[in-house]
Length: 493
Ligand SMILES: C[S@@+](CC[C@H](N)C(=O)[O-])C[C@H]1O[C@@H](n2cnc3c(N)ncnc32)[C@H](O)[C@@H]1O
Image 1 (cartoon, rainbow, N blue to C red):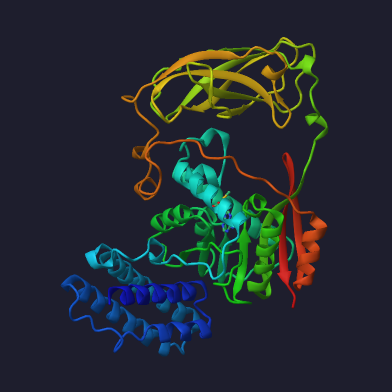
Image 2: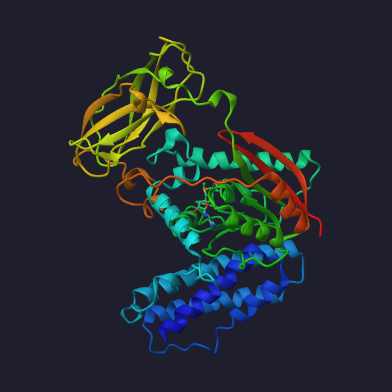
């Protein structure tokens, strides 16, 4: 009986989530209405008292919601608001009910995947998607905010949460302004944020759109996003481990947004999602996404000849006081010991070795160097992250021309220091994080795997869009190592 109740609650929650995404959609509202028919289906007289009480609460909220849907003939906007409000109350009581069922001894056979709000993909996930999902899951458990926005200075859980979310506001404002200056009138109804992470952009979108659904492949990202945005009634999050967006009906969204997500997917998968964005957007409404086309070798980033790769390095600050996985900041003095100026982008970086000289972690921190003339020197602050296990390690600092070589590979001396990582010293653990993030990450920080990067040619993106009935209204370029495009499309048919 508890299994049926659990499944029933999960199905109802799914129906609620769909309406939160599309509160004006009559058809989806009707689906929810039939999912709300609790009475007569379940009479768990023999269930524990707590379950019966919660079930009663769920029924009460279900009736209230059903009444609101049935009587929704007035102003559609205020009706949608009332419905959204009732859904929040119902989802809260459903979540409590499911939690209690999960803890009941006779429910031990219930699979973890049936946790409320977690959607089992309709199709078998392909290997590629599940590998990518696993690595995002590791990234999320290691350093969720940095995994979303990988600013070198913010590694090892150094992001301030408010500053982090402010970056989302800035980005969404920029996209809206760009749309406006291209003569596009966005409709601020329902928005979908694909690859939402912890909801950096979803939150900013929710300040402008009536409802927002954030979608992500990582359970931990979604858990943090939900925890951080409990109070935001018009914002919901959906775990989606499928290579499609079948949970979103065709022509149902006013705006689809996806930033720094498609670039981490293999092109075939990215194109599938892209087609899904074009499917779910309503005619006359808009899709924004960012995607690089290709890696660029800027003129100043040409390969430096080995004889120019000579540096004198010194660690000019104390490296004591590191606990396992803790973040520290060191100052490195760098002198150009070659005969030519360093104009190409170069970084100070570090490795960690054990006492036998074996590499424990090769790529750790990075800090950009200013251009240096021969014999010129500069002090650079570098954020390092200690290995996750206590012990004595060698910290080795070097210069890298990214994608080309470390200077040590062509004989330039590195700077080294022995560092004791002691278990009685502070770690970059969960203590320093807000509760909603701390509850979902690993206790001790340990660096996660690197990101994959991919691009799709602009002409190919445009061809797919055109075939899906879209018109490109604006495309902004942004060049780092990659030539990146920020597209705004309008659905014309
Ligand atoms: C770099 S983060 C960007 C997050 C967010 N768009 C932002 O700008 O704040 C990329 C996000 O995409 C998610 N992601 C990666 N592959 C995905 C997939 N196949 N489906 C949905 N989300 C995915 C990751 O879990 C991660 O949260």
